[in-house]
Image (cartoon, rainbow, N blue to C red; front, side, top):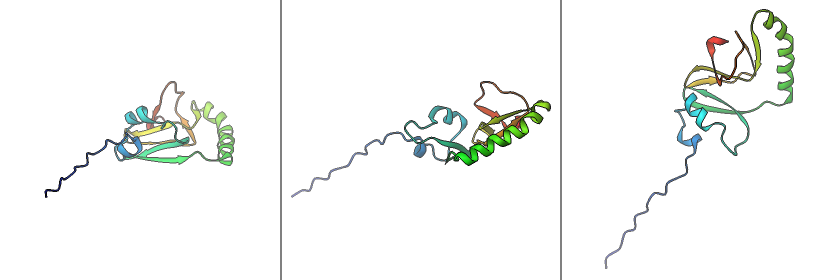
Length: 119
């Protein structure tokens, strides 16, 4: 009697950017896939292609950032600089951070990725 072997066909898994892009994240991929629809709201940063997710800080941090911005805004403006809350500071296409507060050399408009040389 011959035993019939069944081969299991691999079922294609749905695309998951957090899994499928692990280690190869770039600013271009971030523009395509972030934020993740339906996922909790988080801060996305990237270190050499590896996405780092962290929750937004609570109200004490937000209050502290606001107070600091208010304290330095006049001096920054006098120096020709601008104070911004969270922006995407890009060091390379595979490395970016989102500081809570950033002082930029000049005003920005319609930029998603701020070159670190602008800080």
